[in-house]
Amino acid sequence: MAKPRKRYVCQACGSVSSQWAGQCGDCGDWNTLVEDAAGSNVTPFQARHNLQSGGRAIMLTGLDTDVALPERMASGIAELDRALGGGFVEGSATLIGGDPGIGKSTLLLQAAAKIAMRGLKVAYVSGEEAADQVRLRARRLGLGDAPVQLAAATSVRDILTTLGEGASPALLVIDSIQTMHSDLIEGAPGTVSQVRASAGELIRFAKERGTAVVLVGHVTKDGSIAGPRVLEHMVDTVLAFEGERSHQYRILRATKNRFGGTDEIGVFAMANEGLSEVANPSSLFLTQRDESVTGTIVFPALEGTRPVLVEVQALTVRLASGATPRRAVVGWDSGRLAMVLAVLEARCGLSFSSCEVYLNIAGGYRVQDPAADLAVAAALVSSLAERSLASDCVAFGEIALSGEIRPVAHSALRCREAAKLGFGRALGPSGASGESPLALSAFRTLGAFVDHLLGR
View 1 (tube, rainbow, N blue to C red):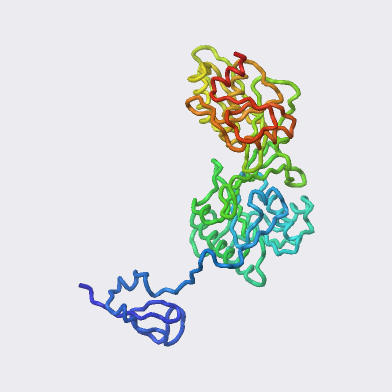
View 2 (view 1 turned 180 degrees about the vertical axis):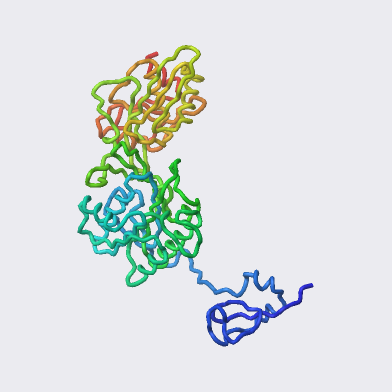
């Protein structure tokens, strides 16, 4: 049996010691070590590993306590505020990731300049560019007179020491977190331990000082944010900047937001003057539809509360017997396409086994709405039968494996957006809720929908 030993607890800091001393070794106060009567018969192992005593009492408050809630700080860019849920929150940490050259630094520099022009203190710390390079880009964007405080540094200790002097900034931009280095952790910048430690110190600074911190993150080949997955758990908001560099549009999508919804998007267009907001995204993703073309139809997608009209294009090419058909998809889930093709063959009697199938969402937009099933099926049937669809018609609905067309959310909102752009008819599921300004043709099964398209 282990020999019981006494323990002494510091009345100032709560540290535990196995023997009495005149000065506490942790806080340095004198004559504060007092023998703990309750712990006089504990072993050295228990004294070190028991966490039920020796700590500092924390203050608990009720959920309904009347306190001042953190305020939001508008960025001055409506599309960015929409994705954030209304703007930056004081003391929050935001992580934004995207492909190289997509416009992350440009967007944040524009937001920082607009906030600084309102009289708020803004700091922009770049670990990848020199301060003169950031100034050069700001002048190209017409923001050379913005009172943004610039610095080129990679040491987290130096950054926090500098910002700790005087008033804390309202917004701090770190570009990027993979270039930051903490001298408490061994390893080169960008490693898992360095990214986690650097982000932890910056987030702690944000919570203590009320500064909104924005961290720029690199991405891997598959598009996920580089570094440990815990980085996305540590921050309050995760934004993904999407788009193809060959197209002018950019989409800012929230994948995590503790202060708002994750179903809103912001749409931007890249120009020589930087990123400009797109107030009507539907006009950006629609091509000229003067003549009816086989294999094309418009789908009213829904991103949060914003409807976006996109054009679905399909092409089927018959092959000689024995050849392996190809399936190519751009802007949609390839697994979802395989499911729609299987339902069309099993429930409607259409054969795609001897055809190559190509599916494209015009404009490089990526559709994630399950209501696109019916529009994809309409484009496939139109291309296979070489029958063009009406140019003033839209289609939406979710297809089940049984061949049933299931209702989708906010069908009336989709139809109203289509009516604004001159569309007059809609193909959708039966039982669609709400009044539609379009002439709605409702279908319960995919077979009835295909019969309508083929004029059976």
